[in-house]
Length: 174
Image 1 (tube, rainbow, N blue to C red):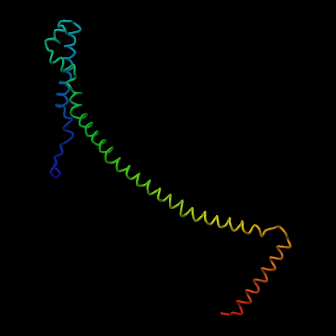
Image 2: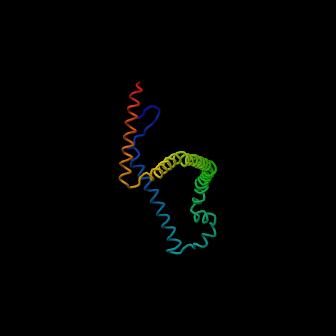
């Protein structure tokens, strides 16, 4: 079936009987040959494994090293990935970390400037107000004697002063 330019094979044909028989026969024959060869060497002892190893030394080493699959895998996949990973790690340490450390130093300087503003301007105004309030309280402390006659006299003097001030401002007019 053609859809566009792609060819999609009929999936049911991949399960055809002749394909299964071929794969089955090849797999079974390989297993039987291996079993027969192992029996000749180790079961019936018709052939000596040591002599076969010496005579077919190259094939023996190739098979003993698992077709050098691990070395090939290491060469094709592991080493390139490790190299790329090392380069990425070096870039991270030298470029990205340096940039982040620069931003951290900059933020620290901005924070120290903000700390100076807070300490000297904001706290300075609050502390100055507190000092003025404390000084005013200390000055007014002498007025507070605890003597009732003195308080009544100060209230009368304040009332008279306010009355004179109100009358004087009313007389001056707008």
